[in-house]
Length: 169
Image (cartoon, rainbow, N blue to C red; front, side, top):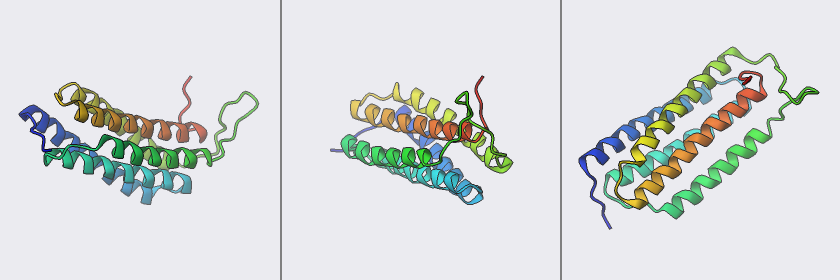
């Protein structure tokens, strides 16, 4: 079954395509620049998921109906990998349960801050796009991608917090 997109839907998907391409580029580049091996792996995992997002967007743009169940299964597996990777980082806590600063690397902190801001922006763009689509399956697919973008942001935040880079007060 092929889908017919409105002009607005097409425009929104083209924007999301550019966002996904930028995310892939950043995560891939930053995985090479990061010094911490845990952070490198986190960025590599996210780059892979962003590629899945881009593939899904390209499928929709070409008129293919997304397979929501298949997307969710593949994306859930990626999230499980990310979560197990971030848990294995071994966050050290002081007696008050707060993360301890381990003299984190400034370059890694910069990379994390940039990607956290990127994920916030991309998630917000998906939020807007979701409301503009008439097809329920596409809305569900975009909503699922948005949830993964939010998970990426949470993964980065958790990493930063565990290293003393980000401490909400």
